[in-house]
Image (cartoon, rainbow, N blue to C red; front, side, top):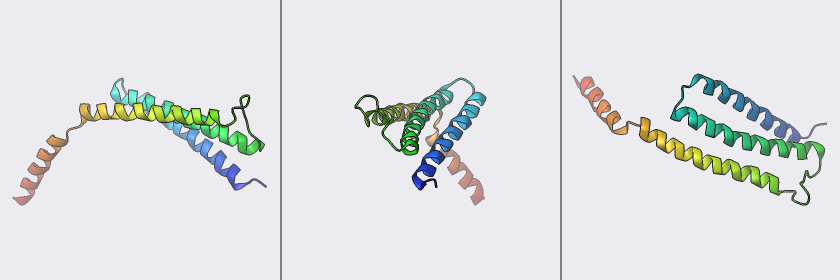
Length: 120
């Protein structure tokens, strides 16, 4: 019988692969620019998390440590560290995109105009 941990691990990998496929489809529809660069960076982060999940799934299925020499836990930590580093970069890109496309102040003006029209 398959353990719950194995099912969760395999499900996580399947969701990760599905996410990468959806991101790839979305990316192909975007024109060049900051949003496409954001999607590229996000994809890299997701890929590192997927590698981490594959590593964990392999450990779960085969029931032993998969190690490179005596560094059993380090590859997992490296994958997660790269993912978080990527998320920092993605967050910075999103911040830049918000400056480029954000129109918070203009939105407030539009809201005032709409409220003014409703009063009439």
